[in-house]
Image (cartoon, rainbow over all chains, first blue to last red; front, top):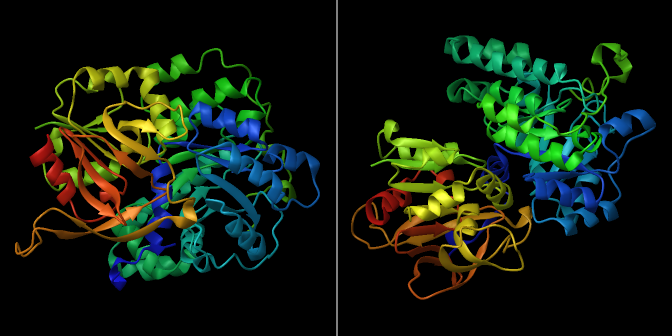
Length: 299
Length: 193
C-alpha cells in the first residue's frame, strides 16, 4: 500500500465531521443503560454518560468528577449511537482514560469541578474529539484554538431556566455578525479585545459562522425551548436534566427531538407540546448566588 | 431537475452546498414533510444518526411517500444504512430498498474514524485515466458486508465496497459532502437520476 492510501485517524476533518453528523439533533444526559435506551429510542443523536445529571450535581455539592468508567461502559454497551462523557476542565488524565475506553466525544465541562483554574486541556494531542462550553465568541475561539472540534453555548446547567442559554447564543451570534461587517484592518484589535486567536477571528469573519458545529445547552427543558435555540441559530441541542428530571421522560424526549427538527413549524410544535407531563421544576437563575453559577468556570 | 435533500437530521446543509455547485439553488428542496416530495426527480439522504433519521421519517410518513414514488436516491453513511435491506444485528427502521447487507459502525468507535484516498470510476481531471482519486471521509462508518445481484460495486477499500449502485439508487459509506469535490454528486445527477 502506498503511503498516500494509508488511513489517517484523528484528523480535524473526522473530529469536526462527527459533530456535523449530529447537527439538527438532540444529545441527552443519561446516568444508566436504561435511560440511554430511552434516549436512543426517542431519537437522540448521542448520549452524555454521567454519574448524576447537573441538577443532582448542583443539589449534592462536593467535588464533581469524571464518571466511574464502569458506568460509562455500561452505557456504551447499551446503545449504538455515539457516547460522550465529561471530564473536569484541565484534567487531561481523565481525558486519557476516556480516550483509552473508546468514548466517542469528550466534554471538557464546567459542570464538573475544575481541576485547573488557568489552563484547559491541550485537545490537539488527542485522537478523540472534544466539545467545550462557551459564553461568548472569544471563549469559543479560545477553545477551538486549543483543539475543540465542537462548541456548546454554556447556559446554566441544571437550572431548567433557558435565560442564560439565550444570552450566550445571542452573544456568540451577535459577535459573529459584528465580525462579518468589520473592515479587515479592525480584526486584529478585535481579536486582542476578545482574547481570541487572530487566525480564528479571520476565519470566523470569512465564514460568517463558527468554524465548528455549535450546539446550545444549559437550561433547555421544553420543546419550545429547543425550537427557540434552533431559531436563534444553534446547530443542535444538549438536554441535561430537562428530560430525566421531568414527569414523563420518554414522551418529553421524543417531543424535544421533533421540536429540534421541526423548529420552524409552529403548528407541529403546538401538536407535540401537548400532554407530555410536567417539565422539571427548575431554579430561577436570578436566585442563584455568584459562587453557585457553573458557567463562570473555565473561561 | 428538482433534487430534494432530506433535512430531518444530519449534515443536510453540506449536501445542499454541494448541489449548489452543480445546479440552480431554486431547484434544491429541503425535505422535512411528505408534502415536500411530489415533484422531486431525486433525493439525497445525508449523513447523521440512522436511528434518529429513521424515527423522524416514520413519524411524518415520509418513508411511504419515498417508497411509493420509486425516487432515485443517493444515501451517504447513515443514508446508506437507511437504504439497506439488511442491517446486521438490528431491527431498526430502513427503507428496505437496496440489496446490501450493512454492519453499523463497522470500523469501530469514533477513534477509528479516518480519511483516506479512494479511486472512483470517473475520469481523472486531465481526462487521461478512467479512475480519479477521491478523498474518502469515513466517520463511524458502516461496512457493506455483502451485495446482492444487480448491485454494482463502483469503489472498494481493502475489498469492502464503499460506493455502490443498484439501478436508480446510489450509496456511499463515506461522506463526499465533507470534501470540496462535487463529482460524486454530479455522477448521481447525471447518471443515476
